[in-house]
Amino acid sequence: MNAGENEIRIEKPATALRRGWTTGACATAATKAALTALLGGDFPDPVTIVLPKGERPDFALAREDRGEDWAMAGVVKDAGDDPDVTHGALVSARIHRLAAGTGIVFKAGEGVGTVTKAGLPIGVGEPAINPVPRRMMSEVVNELCASSGVAPDIGIEISIENGAELAEKTWNPRLGIVGGLSVLGTTGVVHPFSCSAWIHSIHRGIDVARAEGLEHVLGATGSTSEKTAQAFYDLPDIACLDMGDFAGGLLKYLRTHPVPRLTIAGGFAKLTKLAQGALDLHSGRSQVDMRWLADRASRLGAPPDLINRILEANTALEVLQITSSEGLDLPAQIATAARATAIETLRGAAVEVDVMVTDRSGTLLAHAR
Image 1: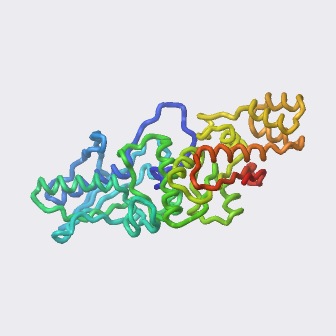
Image 2: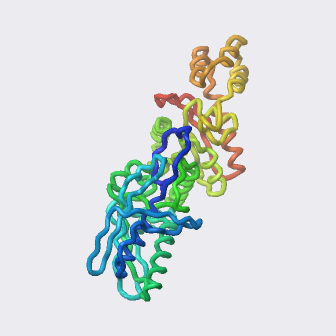
Image 3: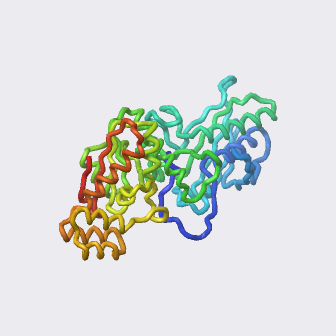
């Protein structure tokens, strides 16, 4: 999903950042420890696993327990310096034997969600354990069972402490993942403030919307503009794609996975960047060009003294205030130009686009359609 690696985004600090481990890596470590114990050994602590790229991290066990035909181990997730809501959560695996010929079966324990909508890489009704973590855990099971001379007929129940409550802070509910978090990860490593995690979450949102047959989706730069556009069109939550700063990630995926209609909504400054041709709207990766705004104001008949004030302005908000007080409809210019950038990026894909510019209170300033 997820929804990225179940994260909430804040501004990235300037200092060097420490990486961490995904829920999938933690679940794999817990699975290996519990199965080792179930097969008659001691709980390995620390437990070493092999990640998809060959790295071999060690995980300390936070919990361990076993019975006659089951064993359980838990690992506390360390997300490094990423603002991940699952940082510090206990990820547990309860392993038990199954009937001969059953194979490996995954189950959602407490705090792990269940997939209820099509379009995700896991089928409807399945526990929200993504393909790579499933493969990592299956490899551990096959290897340990083979070395012990037993068939890999094993049930794997993954739980995440307080996962149901934490999931409310993620995009899982919009993606139709109910009851808890997703077990995620493609490399096993959490890279702090990962752009790719966010963009992949946008892609999964589009996949779900397409699978549900939605004909209209919304990408907004923030919650205020999203609420305005969602109410304007009476869109369901599942249609809202959490675009954030990643307009390019949204538009390029829609280029090859089209939805009939797209609304882009955002504040004046963010959409000015899109209007200028930027596809990454983050303040650290694109800037509002005051000369560009001055040129647009000039087209609306702004006199030289007003143009100078725009060129000397510190922020886009100041430009908006200056031009609005003089009766110049600069937001309409921004909406039209932003729509043109979006259409150009879609490269002829069958997607109708409209753009809504809002102020900080959510008031609609302009609408290009």
